[in-house]
Amino acid sequence: MEYKNPKLPENNVSKEHPLKEFSTLLIGTLVLVVVVSITLSLAGSTLAGYIPYSAEKKVASLYDVSTHSDNERFPEIAAYLQDLADKISKAQNLPEDMKITVHYMDSPTMNAFATLGGNVFMFKGLLERLPNENTLVTLLGHEIAHVKYRHPIRSFGGGIAVAIAMTAIGSSADSTVLGDAGLLSTLQFSRKMETQSDLEAMHNLNSLYGHINGGAELFKIFREARGGDGGSEPSEFFSTHPQDEKRINSFTENANKYNWSETGELTPLPDFFKF
Amino acid sequence: MEQLLYVAVFVTLGYFFGKRAESKHFKSLIEREQHLNALPAMASRMPPQDGQYDQVLVSGSVVIANDYFKTFVAGLRNLFGGKITTYESLLDRARREALLRMKEQAQQMNADLVFNVKYETANISGQTSKKPPIIEAHAYGTALRKL
Image 1: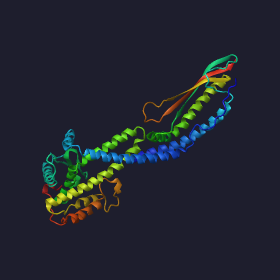
Image 2: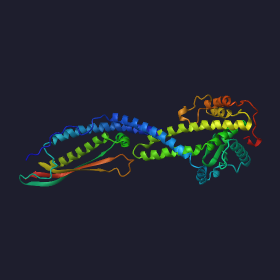
Image 3: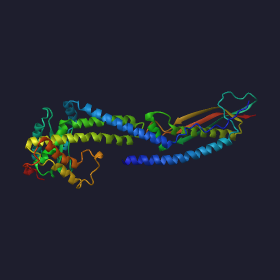
């Protein structure tokens, strides 16, 4: 018997160029990730909106946020902020069980935010720049409106739904690429919430003082802090908040729409509130 | 964003270095296969019946590392399914190299034929899916030398 190994043709490997396959797959994956994360974050945040507030409160109470606040060291400021928050809650018709707790933070960070369980944090770095009570009420009203419309839990719900999906496929594909794309698509949702809260803040500013003078000051402060006329402002897609200029203009637009007065007497801040 | 940059750098490096190593390897494979063509390797389990032979177990194994580009493409391919073409060439190279090493061993003992040839492949990169696969291919058979 004769044994032979003839020369085989070189065809046991696909001839397709690897870069072609690479680009097709990469584009396909990015489109898939964007579509899936937008769908999931919308679905997650919509569903999270149905979580009863009492359940949200229970979860939030597992973590004692008051340990971070400086309310005890500054009782006068804390009481004043809390008193304003209670007035605003009434003006915004918050449900009975939706109690707002304001936490004063003695920190130079220029920020204020609302989180789960009706907890609103106000930082000294932002408060010290406010010129009058009307602007402070706009800021507080904006954060309280977030709680009213359940934005914290909805944003968590959307974020968690996307995060779970990304972890699930992250093991088979590169998770850094997927994570970044996922983040961009959840940010866009929050911007709608900001606009909604701005409008609610204007409503309660008008109902408490009879005019909305001083409200737009808040966003002028942000614009100045960012360095003037928006030269260094990040492009709108990458920013959680709508652009400052747009928000300042929205005060005039809504004043015309709802027949609010844009002039009126400004209420000064109490003496102990000067930093 | 910084992480994205790292991924891009690794994928680019992987593509160019991986491509260079692969084409070099294929060139060497074709050359050596031609050289060893006179010594046939058969999968048949039935030894030749014409006379007496010395019988020796011969084997050849090779470990081939993957590059970042291939892993990245394969990872994306896992989402959609289908041929992972970037791994096809990797495994083809590993099997042919292992067979050649086995044949080289048989040639050293002046064998006339290797029969009952079998392949084994093993992934030795561990259980974690985060690491790029490293593949071992092992070819073994019975070398025969006519007495």
